[in-house]
Amino acid sequence: MTKIVISLFVIFLAGCSAVSITNEGLHVRQIQPNDATICSFLSVIEVSGGLFYSSQTEAKRDMLAKIRNQVAGINGNAYVITSIVVERGFSLPFAQADAYKCP
Image 1 (tube, rainbow, N blue to C red):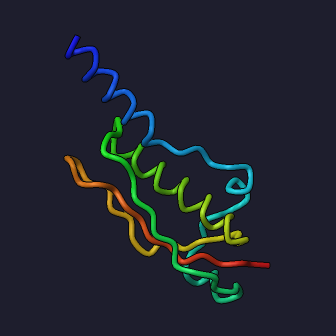
Image 2: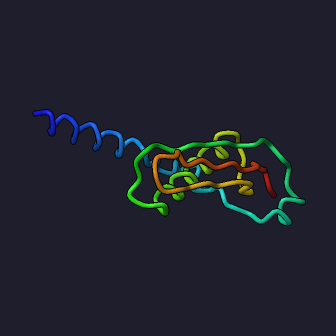
Image 3: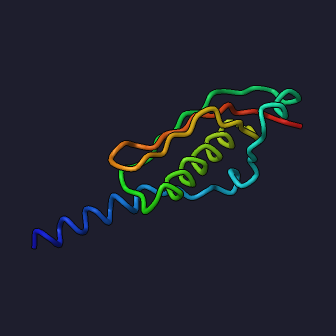
């Protein structure tokens, strides 16, 4: 019984980690810092992830999805990554980006 409860708890936490990109987030793109000179700066976006990911790639994908969703949430359409940290172990992944509205 205890093993079943622990297994369900782990599955629950793992399922809560990944975020889907919203329809609005699909219209947000990553740009290079030089490209941001023709855009209007909106805000700094900071996101963090959960404890359980199947790989570092999955954790990074989740951080980028969260950034895209948040940029879309403030009516932006582009972002420049300023920091992204995804490590093995029990440290939580996080990312920071500058959000922009570009023509």
